[in-house]
Length: 532
Image (tube, rainbow, N blue to C red; front, side, top):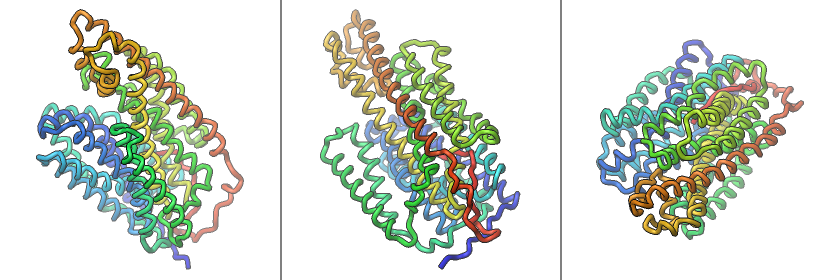
């Protein structure tokens, strides 16, 4: 028996508060991801931590963030988006406060993992609440602002973290996050509530199988490059993930109120929207992580200077979401998605000009093209994803979409890290014997991937040090060229799939009948927004 959905509350004052809260977290959460990496050296020196423990400050957050997105998205439809938003934001604020006050790295790792769960709750409920607060062209503009704020967090997160760490202490980066979170909580108290009354109970079996499957998959991706892909533990994680995923499909196909409606994957446009951020993770996010290490290793610049250079890549994400929202008046989602993917593919191919001591002007072209392409996607994807389903299922759609996005980022970073080390090792192997004191090809490759050429160079006899530096830089550049061609190919192959999947279909012109004035109105295409 169906239940009448709640009317959508689109009062201007409440819609404005919803937009304010969503934009604040859109700036905050990317900062928490990209900025944390900048604080790790100071944190390690203060807490006496080794590299493995420090890496889990980032990995624990990414792991739980990705794993719990779909569960939180579905739960927000059931228990209410405002409740989920406020609960997640409270968890995030408390964990940030504890992380800043911690005196033990293990405690930091634990609370960062819990903070990831809070972030998952916030991001899915925010995007679905935003979709319900606005309609038509106003929704496109709202998601355009949302994407712009995401770009602000992405572009300036590392700089903000570096400034706070240098001027005060690494702890103040986490304290600042807690302060912003409290402001968001106060604003979010006036967000209108919304839920799906047709899903009256929690799908515990679906929640457990999917979350556990994704948790094991990402754990395998994190540990694989560290202990080896053939290691029994990694293989066990992968096998367990596959079995749990099969269990999830079986459970959901038999559930009257599934955590995720598998029928959404029969909608070609929704599939395209889920595939796009995965491909873009290879063309943009992976570069965001590994280019600073390249610049620090081959050019010998500081982390701060590498961050400034990276603004060529991230700055376009500040303006392009709004541009995409404006362009949506004339261009279809299909045209915008194909354009953004083509630009990223072209930019990564162009970036193969990269080499040691290359000038800023030579880098500006390809980095700006990639950033423009990614920025367009920030103005398209989230709004289109939540608008491709009925409003009362927006949380579920946002949950799966953001799960695909974050999982894609984890996969892209893990894959590029593994490729970077293996290809660099191959490039070094032919000539490293002439500089035996530097270490093995594998050791040097690992150091280069972490942005460190100095350690191996200082081991080499001084008379050979210049030649060795040039040799290692050339090998690293050669490896980067090979990987950039792979990244470009991944994005380019995605273009025809998007063109086919996003083509208009006749059945989309006939919306289902709904109860007037209820939340179950027919979905509208919206070209806007970004979340994570």
